Length: 239
Image 1 (cartoon, rainbow, N blue to C red):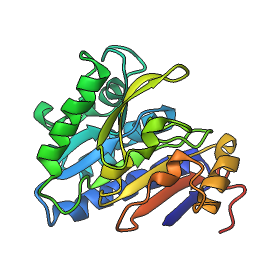
Image 2 (cartoon, rainbow, N blue to C red):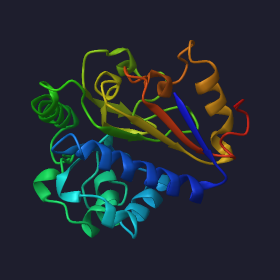
Image 3 (cartoon, rainbow, N blue to C red):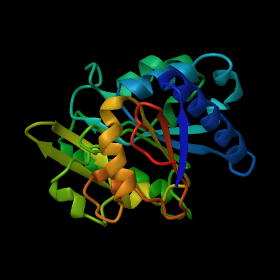
Image 4 (spheres, one colour):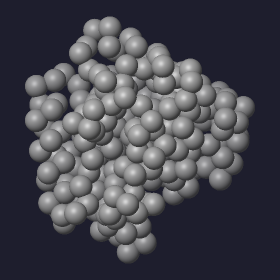
């Protein structure tokens, strides 16, 4: 595990944008394409805006990227809560990337059908590869959830599926990647900011053997797990 701690949210997003840009550059020196799974939320929105602006956008070979998502709310694409729409509005519509390199999670079919369809796409894309995504971007909630994996959910015990539908009275219906596919990624990066995440971050990073939180299920097999956090979120960490 690698901790990257910066003064505030602005410094964190800039540092992560730099890190992503360099990771893409290095990967494309040895591979034809770069696969990335995006996350939703307000903090990633700032990251996407930064990647879409100079100098980052000019340094990335967007035509060689393939875009996926870690999870999606079961709402139409034109809904402001839709993760794909957020990424389109703040990043993808502003860079040179082909539409057939963008792999949305569909929400115009049932959640179960959507999960099966997305899993099929991922298996077709990654089954013959040593790793899955080159990079998965993740966030973490105040309850320690990541993706659409929430504390107490029955699907947390599913170690085989790559994608699952989520039905929650509190969180609504969603489609999510599972740890089984994320942990085969070449790299995983969490972006966590704010003092409201400090206590749970301490628990997640300090009591990994207990597995009390869904975020603790993310353990890449090659140990390329990166946490990009600000000083507020790192308040209770020993580093």
